[in-house]
Image (cartoon, rainbow, N blue to C red; front, side, top):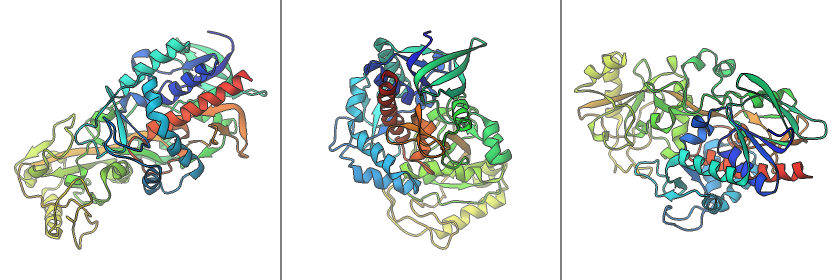
Amino acid sequence: MNPLYDVVVVGGGNAALCAAMEARRAGASVLILEAAPRHSRGGNSRHTRNVRLVHERATDHLEGAYPEDEFWRDLIEVTGETDERLARLLIRDSAGLGAWMTANGVRWQPALAGTLQLSRTNAFFLGGGKALLNTYYDTALRLGVEVAYESEVADVVPAGEGGASVSFRRGGVSREARGRAVVVASGGFEADLDWLGEHWGAAAANFAVRGTPFNKGGPLRALLAQGAKPVADPRAFHAIAVDARGPRFDGGIVTRLDTIPFGIVVNRHAQRFADEGAGLWPKRYASWGALIAAQPDQVAYSILDAKAAEAYMPSAYPPLRAASLRDLAPALGLDPAALQATVQRYNTAIQPGTYDPARLDDCRTAGLDPPKSHWALPMTDPPFLAYPLRPGITFTYHGLAVDERARVLGQDGSPMPGLFAAGEVMAGNVLRRGYLGGVGMTIGSVFGRIAGREAAKHGLA
């Protein structure tokens, strides 16, 4: 390991690799510090499978066009508040992303059936996130990027003339790497349950973490302590409904449940608490993590009947089944009479309509609180099915404020010399709440490339 690099990249996922490849191509010496061992490298990117990007026409793996203005409308619909300069930059630069990824070895496939109606807006990687990461690592190593695995960063100390000293532990020994420029691309702090507990209290103990257990936020906390400007609410995160039977960490995409629009969701008291038909699923699915987090014991139950059994992507865990709601309730720890009453009220409130899960149809309820705005069908056909749900956090939004050059900003809004950020650690500049399928990979790819180029300029100056 060299005593000084032009660019040190903290993190080993998509954003980090995009930064490292761009910096190396610009002529910089580059070191990646990845907290995970080699077999678990890649952070949350291992669990991804697609990226949202602007395109003008259909391709062999995309259906139709997805223009900039539509991307902007979709984004603002789910997040509301955003830094419009950075959001517009993200959207505009995504237009060239597909060609760049192809040039770096990524191969594509058409969208799988049942994947949240994303076949027009999102491009799917052949082999998923793990294949993408392996391809990027191969490319980075061929370019001459150095990689240090099992290197968990504990501190990032900015240097007076720019860049930083990065402290990390490897093999039980404290070490240091110095960079004329440093790119922090180490994810959020969702795997640090104590940090989550500072903002969510006891509820955090019931959260599942969909991604890597290595995203503990050490570099983020270090830079905030050094005067970096924070962005986004510390309670805000991208969280979805996952199967409560899944693992605490690293459940990834397979523990996600896409059942919610096709039935009802009840809490521990067998009461509905949100509109299961509000909005198309690619824009709405990420709201359910926070909704369930607000329920008693942070658990809920997706209830369906036989009509919905083939409507959603197959799940990793089989549903609980019973011939009647009365028989299903005890398996969930619910009061049978309360569950029957909830379903009866729902069935009675349903209005006639033409069912179509591919659009916002006119199958809705009337006089029911909360309503079901679309896709409301009577739940009458046995067997009845159920999945236990809990919040599954993908990543936190609280992070580092950056500018259009991906430079980390200080409390006064001016850049901190030699410090750059990309990916989930700065996603809160664009996302303040909600989520849009595939946009996390877009953020990491676009700002990773920008951070790599800008860090190389700084490191080689």
